[in-house]
Length: 252
Image (tube, rainbow, N blue to C red; front, side):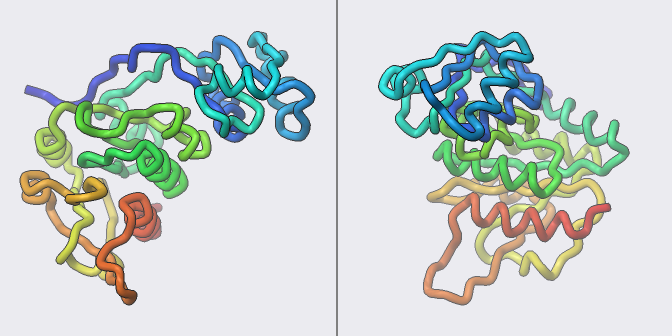
């Protein structure tokens, strides 16, 4: 049975808030039903207003309290967009996107990240490092929520994200397609001592327990980040950023 991704939508309407995330949504051509803008907004808010009007997207000026109510948060920076439900892709779509660019696949796999802010931060790093997509678990893990989009600085609007029911099975299928899988976990090889040429995927585990035993066994190599301070580990999104940009150095 294949577990190459769930293309289904997440369900209810999605609110994207914050100036950079909304600008990214506009730039990506995503389906936006309406934009709420705080009255008398300045700076980037005026640019968002102009872009929305040019794209024919309805814009509703609101006072700060009403905007906070629509956005579901007071951290909206004066702007929020109502978008169609998030479209998850399949892993096959990520591989096809890499092939279309003439590049070896570069994928991030998240084994149970539960904090949407960590999810957003990883997506932002993945996008910055040139990864072709991110794979997440469909259950018992953070999904692409407004908080995740905000934490990604808008990268989650355009970055391909695939949901799978079984990470271990998805890794098996990726390996069958020639992808070499690295797991970031304790007691691994120094991440900076390896080269990461060719098709590669990086697995990042959950904030508390790291990579699950079965998923760790599926990885081709385990890498770790040597720490010189008193802490024994890094935050999951920080670890992902460190290793991803090291991997990116070996790519064309």
